[in-house]
Image (cartoon, rainbow, N blue to C red; front, side, top):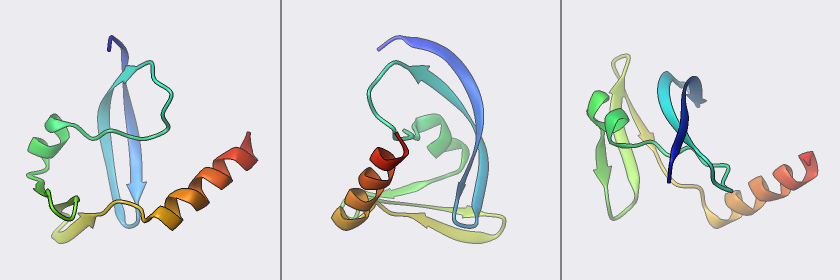
Length: 83
């Protein structure tokens, strides 16, 4: 993959809000890939069994977990309706 450009974006996941510098590459996905720089900068722990990411943000523990199969399907339906 070739990095086309870099962009700084603000993401909000529930109460968690952060500004992250992203490398942009051409791909046919609509996911945000949070890489090693983000993990190291935020001192993130990754549970490889449950696929959860945990870190402390503004004094509170934040845990990011993968979507369930039902949530993925609902999200895909919403995205198709927007197109």
